[in-house]
Amino acid sequence: DAKTTQPNSMESNEEEPVHLPCNHSTISGTDYIHWYRQLPSQGPEYVIHGLTSNVNNRMASLAIAEDRKSSTLILHRATLRDAAVYYCIRVRGYGKLTFGQGTILTVHP
Amino acid sequence: DVKVTQSSRYLVKRTGEKVFLECVQDMDHENMFWYRQDPGLGLRLIYFSYDVKMKEKGDIPEGYSVSREKKERFSLILESASTNQTSMYLCASKRAGNYEQYFGPGTRLTVT
Image (tube, rainbow over the protein chains, first blue to last red):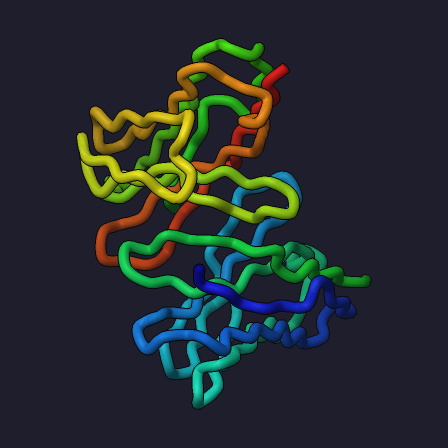
């Protein structure tokens, strides 16, 4: 099955940038990289996705390595509301999502 | 904004009962999904539906069935609930051809 590797946890201070890494060394050419996050007691929420180029949206930026074996989700200014579990996943075909353990992000005031 | 609603946030059922979990989305999405989420196992796909009356098995369909009679509604059925089906159940929907899935708040089912 599609595998990604993320750190179990990370910490940040409020209003500082956060870089969440993800390794996907066995990615195939047609796999997209998606990021979702899950706040406590809520369903997952889409954050961003990309294929080869770096991507920006209102929530975050996604930097994808040139060899596509890794990517980084960037939150430019963390807020307390960004505290969540962040999932990096490879998606192919019809879009089945398979979440691993993700990274627990703690944001300190 | 897309809204995906699930019939219950918390549900307690007894072993052997037939359980219905309902999911409704209000954005005319073609694709709908049922997942379960368990500690240590992450999110796993049970069933999905491309469109009305269409359904496909996911990774763990055993013990479950689904129904999609209307575009906005996707039901998950536990024919005879068992304790190993105690879990968080999440419904999601998306527009065909798009990538972003929208999730409901989840139903935490406990089978005793």
